[in-house]
Amino acid sequence: MQYQPVKGTHDIYGKEVLGMRYIETVLAAACELYNYKEIMLPTLEYTEVFSRGTGAGSDIVRKEMYTFLDKGNRSVTMRPEFTAGVMRSIISNKLYAGDLPLKLFYSGAAYRYERPQLGRYRQFHQFGIEQVGSDNARADAECVILAVSGLQMLGFQNVKVKINSLGDAETRANYREALVEYFKGHIDEMCSDCKERLELNPLRILDCKVEHDQEIAKGAPRIKDYLTEASEKRFYETLSIINAMGIEYELDENLVRGLDYYSEFVFEIHLTSPEGKDYGAVCGGGHYGGLLKELGGPDLAGVGFAMGVERLYSLMMENHLLDDIEEGLDLYVMPVGEKVLNDAFEITMACRSFGYSTDSPFQSMKFGTMFKKAEKLGAKYALIVGEEELENGVLKIKNIATQEQQEISLENLQEELHDIFGCEEEHHCHCHECECDCDCEECDCECGDEEHECHCHEEGCHCHHHDDE
Ligand code: ATP
Ligand code: MG
Image (cartoon, rainbow, N blue to C red; front, side):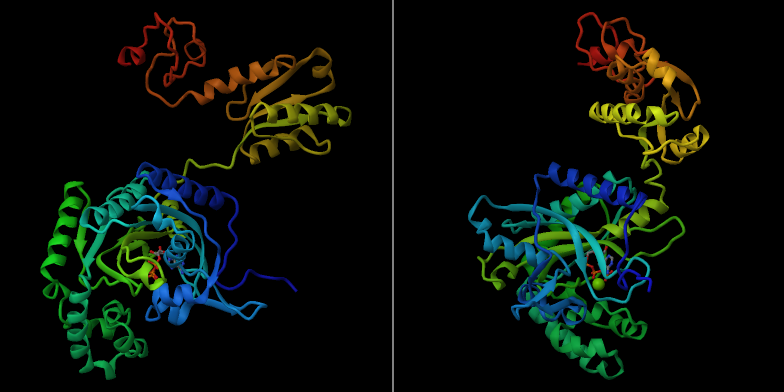
């Protein structure tokens, strides 16, 4: 019997791991710029956290949750999203009693029992934020600006946002009534989901993916005609802030979002691959009121978004934004013959202790095989350890890409490796000052690369870099 992963789940390995980690790191860095702090939550919550928090009327709670009884007969659920869990945690830990607004970000796996397809899994990863405690247009705007800057930091250009306002409680009560009135006349010809939605959450009908239902929805009343003055004012304030930041957006009146507690500002971000493949939304978010209160906390509103990390990864791959990410290795130590295996092992350990990612075979291999392996592993250099080399205390080091070989003293291994790798590491800036005549290490490097970054603070150094400082 050969086991496969559970339907809708997938193993992540090789380049995808690097890509997913990279995405997480860049988005976390974006969040830190905006003073958001990470929160790590349990995967499991009591089912009620989601049935109340995500909302009984949401598709997630109605159809998509992994819910089971634990051995103590308690109903628990694998988180299908993070917002409800963050609210639960804010209450459990009385975080609301501290400094407000709370600005939190999270990253981790979520679980939804959905039909697996392109960009849709049963276990997937979300990265998101919640801001709780400031209830105004500027807080809403900051949320979408952070989402867009995160995507820009990942390399996406021309990020376009879809925006809508669901208004305040009064708006939605009036609009709901108008929607029910309108759809009542058509519900017989609509899908079974919409029949349920008419009772539970008529707004969600606007979001139905069935073509015939979409046609009917086109004739439905428009929410913008129901916005109260206060909601309208707030919405246009948010839009003007977003506009001023140069963020492109389009208004989408059918955008209603899944959570029951969304109100006022909601948004989604869709990105496309060069071939136009549709992975669905990469980011969804909005403002919510009443959610914290519903779960037993104080009446504080919030705003947040969640991004789908797998969808981001696929889009980054297709847009060639991850081409430079390599698994790679700094050094591959090659023992020539059985006798030097122990020495090679020690040298390998030493290289690791100097901070270089290093590997070496556990048993002796043919020279050619080891070279192939070094190439396959993406090693930058091969360090050759033979009996003669050990006797003389001088090893050979070969640049795998250029095939250039030089000698390196075993006694000064750390310094000499530093010189060799130093050239590689400092190729990031554009100061063109490798050959200035100060004494610092950077400027002394003879690698000939013109993109050296000089960090020296030596007096008398004439590079432009320092003139700027
Ligand atoms: P969709 O309309 O695609 O079902 P959603 O509105 O249910 O999305 P949200 O609850 O807003 O999704 O979740 C935020 C993000 O998480 C989505 O924009 C998407 O990128 C990602 N996401 C949601 N469900 C899945 C899934 N089953 N597999 C992979 N990513 C998902
Ligand atoms: Mg969904």
